[in-house]
Image (cartoon, rainbow, N blue to C red; front, side, top):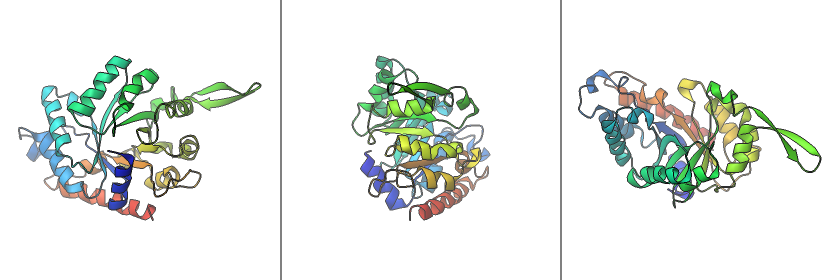
Length: 285
């Protein structure tokens, strides 16, 4: 999916909601547990209930890989069920030496037909480059995450030379954003920034004013949709605007897909998704 197609869907649906299909077999409603394809049936019901309210679905591959072959089959069936109008993200956090990353890219972009994959940048450019070589596909690189461990590396300060005499401090995540943004462009490269890092969004938009941000952490993790929308959109104050662009996908997973443990789970998931879409519609005005 191209950037233009994604932005067009955002404006048509008045939504930048990404629904996370982080489906845990132990948490789906009891009436589905005995179904031979319980994960797929659950996911299909969630997709049917929310597809007019969101522009993207994100599959956290760990929940499927943990089930072995059956899990991979469920993931493939789910991806194939998602409409082509929706941006399909493999939340796989891959990143390895070049020839290995090439195989990961082939697996998720050719065999599984995802539009994007999350990538860890620690091993450098040659580990990310293979994901950027597919036309119409995206690498979504980890930038600043919401977890407690972000303090271990991402928020450590580096002292760098700035000119001949001046030294400046920068966070490691800032170095990642500046460096990685040169490897691709705003049409094939996004960054993950956690919703609970709202105080950093203005600074992040100064560093990468045009790239899309994938923002997990609203709902169950406590991130504020209002703060994110006001500070992280491409056309927000302090950001360099592209005409009509948004540059933002906000992911909600548990708050939507586990809104109910009963047979009404899909209807309740839709109700929560509607709340997000209604709020997003106001921020898009």
